[in-house]
Length: 379
Image 1 (cartoon, rainbow, N blue to C red):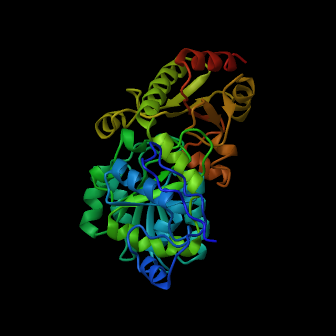
Image 2: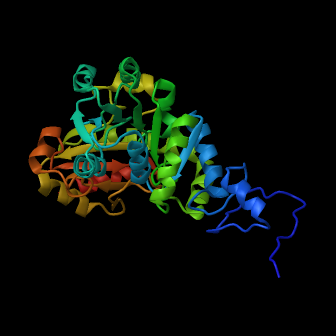
Image 3: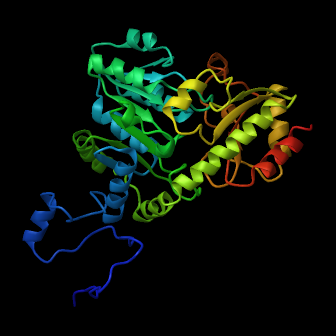
C-alpha cells in the first residue's frame, strides 16, 4: 500500500523539515518533469531539497542577490564557487591575511590542481592591480579579515575589477548581511559560513555563496557532483536563527565595542584590533561601509605565547573555542588553531603574534565579559 500524507486545512507557522533523502513519484512522466527542472519537483536531496531551497531563497533576500547556493560548510561553498570559475592554468588574487583554512586551500590544494594563487595586501589597490594577469579569474577578500580585523575597501576593489572584467568574491562571515551587504558595494559573489553568525548557536555546520542567478546556476552541477550539500535539519536550524539575526548582531557589536575599549585600557594588553576603535587604520572606512563594527576583535597580550596561555587558562567562563559567532563569548589562539598551518615566519610577517588572542563577543552582559577578562589578565 502506498503511503499518503493527510491533507492540511491550514499551513504550519514554522516551515517543516523535509528530512528525506529521496522523493517518490507516481509515474515515469513525473520523473521526467522533475529531472527537467520543473519548479517544486525534487528527486534526491543531493540534487535539491525543499528545506534547503527555502534557506537559499532567504539568504539571497538577506544579501540582496538573485540567488544562493547552500553547502555543507563555508569551505565547501568557497571551494565550489572558486572551482566553478577557475580551472587548470587559471589565477586567483586573494588577500594576504585570510582565515588559515582558506589560505591552506588556496596555496596547497589549488596549487596541486594547477590553479595559481597570489596573496596581496588588498588594502593597497595598486598592489591588486599589479597582480592581475590575463589568466586571473577571481579576486577574493574578507569584509573584515581574520584575525587582524582589517577592513577591505569593497567599492575601490569593485571599481578595479570592473575594468578587467574579473569577478570579486567577498567572505562576509565576520560582518553578516546585517552589518554589510557586499553586493551593494559591487561584489559579484558573497560567501558566508552559516556555521557562524547566521546560525549563531554553535550547533550547525553549513555555508553558502550568493550572487547572480547565472553565476549560482553555473555552480550547481559541481555542487551536486561533489555532494557537498547541507542536511535539511541544519538548513532548518539556520532558517530558525535568521529571525533573531539582527537582534543578536546588535548585542554582539555592543559587547565587542565594550570589551575592546576595556582591553585598550589594560596595562598587559599591547594592541587591540577592532574597527570600532577610533585608532583603527580603517575606522572611517568601516563606519561608512558597515552599519556597525562587528562582534569580533583581537588583542595582543604581553609575554607572547606564555602571556596568551596564562590569559586563556585563567578565563573562568569564557571558553577557548577554535570557532566563532556563537551566543557565548569565546576566545581562540590563531597561532595554535586557525593559522597553525602557516610557518612562524609567515605569521610574523602578517602580524599574527604568539600573544594574539581572538575574541568572539557573545550575548552575555557586557560588564560580566569584561570582568572575566580583567581577572584573567591579573597573572
